Image (cartoon, rainbow, N blue to C red; front, side, top):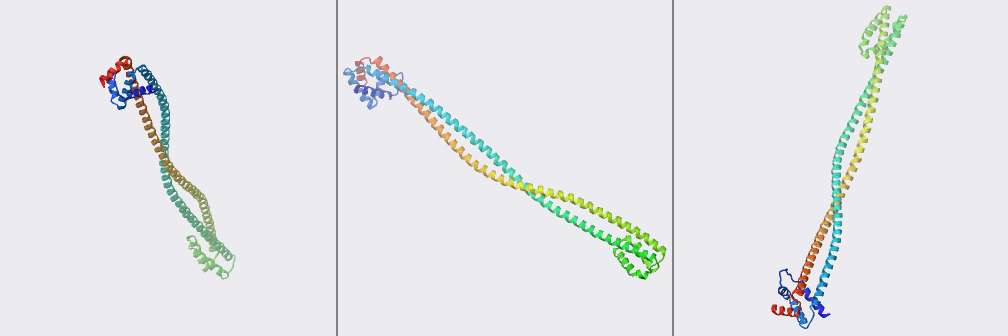
Length: 363
């Protein structure tokens, strides 16, 4: 058992030495001898061989070591293949995660920008609609005042027409009384009131009548009475027609105002509803922008974490790959050493005396 351990130790010492195919047995042993532990092992091995230890045991151990190295390489290859698949899966998942976060950031950025633009447009439209509401209300107030003025004018003029027609009717009665023979003195008070009322109106229509009544007050004759009655009838007919015309104008203006006011009120309702909608939209836009900004911050952090994880995984994968290649290269070197040593033992050192001779010559 001790002899096997000793032989194994020298093999490992030889495995640590770098050799080339052009090196001779002497050069190989010289490489081993440079290490203090290797020198000690060679001395022990020399002693054992000198006492009759078989060289074949070294060959068996070298075969076992070669088999172990090949087995270790196969295990390493299997682990490397499994790790490579796992690394590729992890990296693919991280790249997919990064792509997802990047797409989310792009979508959220577009949402933030488009919503910000929509917010600006909505705020601008609110200002316009607010101005339109104010103009609508002013128009309604102005048109309502105009319509009220028109109605008051009609009421005043209609009342004047009624008064004038009453005065014409009263004058007709007085003239008819005079025509019937009633003394002017008995009708003088009524006559003067009617005359004064007609004069107050200052209407050009009454000027001929006033002149005729004035003449009648100084001289009552049947011819003048007939003329005045005809004039009164004509004036009353004109007053009736004028009053009817005023009434028609009032009704037309009232109908126009009803349509106009309805339109203004509908427009006001529409504008108020539009303003309420825009104000609600503005609130929603601001919420959406705030949420998009917050989500952007989260997605940016997620992206950075995923990128960091990817970088770590890539570095680790590279380190594992480098370690695998290094260990594979080291095993290949060890196998080469074992093969060279086997070659030395089988071709050059077939007997103990040869080894002892080389040992003495070299060392």
